[in-house]
Amino acid sequence: MTTASTHTQVQPRGRTGRRRTNRRRLRQRIWAHRGHYLFLLPTLVLFCLFTAWPMIASWYYAFFNWDGISAATDFVGWDNFVDVVTNPRFWNAFKNSLIFSVVAIFVQLPLALVMAMLLNNPRLRGRTLYRLLLFVPVVTTTAIVGIVWGIILDPNGGVASEALGTIGIGPVDFLSSEHLALPTLLAIDVWKGFGISLIYWLAALQTIPAEIYEAARIDGARGWRTLVHITLPLLVPIGTVIVLLTFQGSMNPFDLVQATTRAGPNFSTDVVGTYIYRYAFEPGSSAEAAVPRYGYACAAGIVFGVFTLLITLVQAPWLRRLYGRGTHS
Image (cartoon, rainbow, N blue to C red; front, side, top):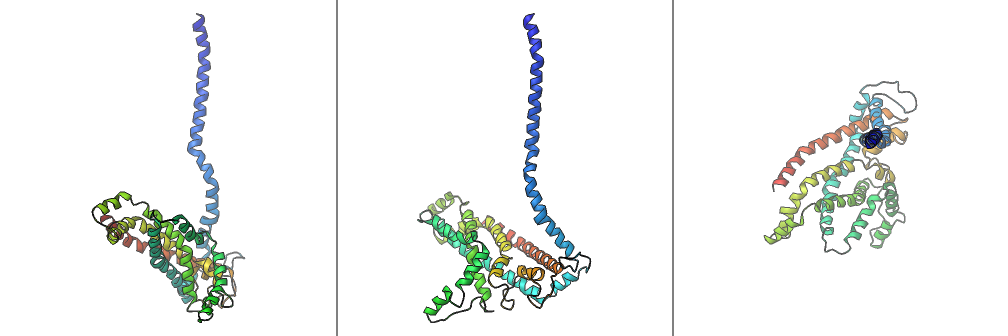
């Protein structure tokens, strides 16, 4: 009787403890499933403030003749978009932006692939140091890169002018010539973005199993045959993504152009980014606008985004067919 009575007295306490434990576990599960949303809240707020809202506001203000200061009351409908697509200087800027992407895809990517193949060789000594040196321009601020290259290419005492003077060519004004400014910026942009393309290709090369190369060597495939029949086909899946990333990243070299030539001389290096910036923040810098035209600048940005999206969609079927060929090779 004593044992039974003791058991009946302890049992309720055990049930209460289990209930508390279950409640504690339930709270932990709720926190585990829903608590991570609390950690995402700062990122979500920043995204809404600095990405989502500017995109929505750009579409709204694009239909107004707005100076950015007073209230947006002068509704003009589609007039800003019509002015953008009929302005030859916008298409000049769009052409130059497209040239940057074409050079990045057809010059920078192939050169980076060749260098990645060399640096992927485990028998190469100091390859980590070489990778670091080639990647340094990527992490360097583009504005600083533009200023430094402006000093180097300065015809009045710049390092490049001094070097050309020693071989009798004389000083060359690379950044003030309508014929040389754009090629010079293209070369700087390739140098600046070379490291990120190199990292992309190195990552892609390291996904190829070493056993495949060993089997190919056993079968007698070496050198050029290994490159054509193994390396390149297996790089196609990741290569398609690298091409799209490079295209998107190189379409807006605003910071480089703004820090070096400011779209000059005579708009020969103008890109869409500097074109939009000029209308929105530098009124009076040219004969195009005497007051800020934020509505027009928003319309120009939307048109540029739409055309960039269309070009990307056009690339997709071709890249998909290329992917199919690569996987079946």
